Image (cartoon, rainbow, N blue to C red; front, top):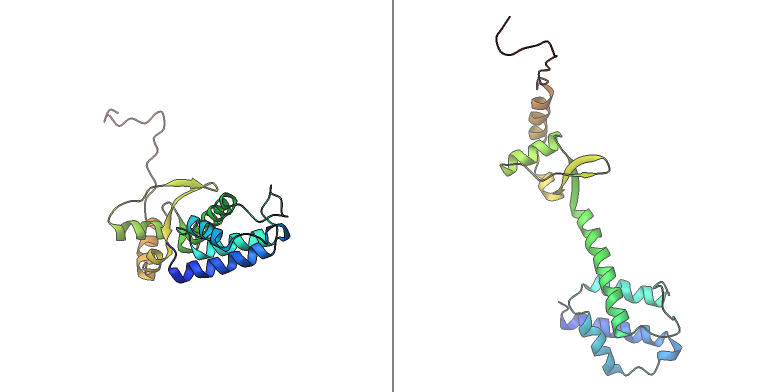
Length: 166
């Protein structure tokens, strides 16, 4: 939710945006309230990015001779917020491969396993980077050794029998 000070900043930015469109210079300043309140639940960064995209004419499928409608503005802010959320996710998260030393160390620290998905041909899961930062070199060394000394599964051929008969 935008603070009162952030709402004032958005209002000033919108006034500048509206002044950039010759056909929209007569927008009632009180109408700006509809724009501000319509995006009050979004981050100031997403709102600023949307305003900049309208100013540069980067929002497609609209007439750039006119300022955006309230609905167009809200929709673009939503799109910028979604992009920002994805950006934030990747800044804070790393993909850890299944059965890697990091995977095993995180699972051991969590006291259980993690879900697993396939991404770019590799199986693993998304782990917060701050959680990975708590994985010590000693933990990784331990997990590397347990993987290194694990025996391969036994393979039986068609002639083998485990019934004990000779």
